[in-house]
Length: 152
Image 1 (cartoon, rainbow, N blue to C red):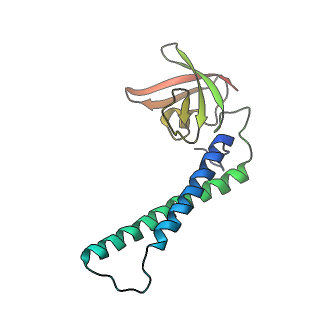
Image 2: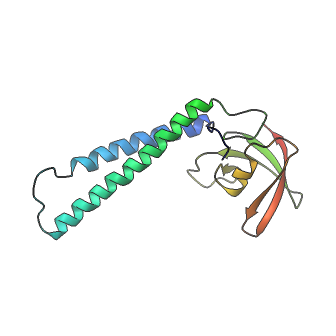
Image 3: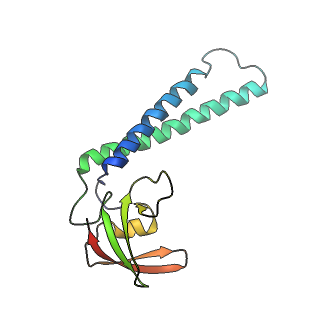
């Protein structure tokens, strides 16, 4: 992304808060099944216990990532209006002359042709640019460029 803390759209902020609540609830359920002092039974019980411990570690890692992103977003403030940032709606003109209006988002919950995530090749290329700028990014067919036509 960019050098400083990244702003976040209202929708992405809501999505991250929902995911965080779900992860915390799931972590609580999984952690409650871990044994404290009871001896582990057979190898199957031991393997199951190790899997649940691994699940808790995975959940803890994702919870930490989301909490860090939420802290960063609170420092960054709202998305900028004069440069492309997360939450910006951008009209771009591709090399073949076609234009598309896309929103730079943080999360893609379902396929959406009008959404590019900030960590996609086009999304990363657009971040920090203004109307009139030409951005270059790697597409499946190779390096390509697009012009930022307008920013909303």
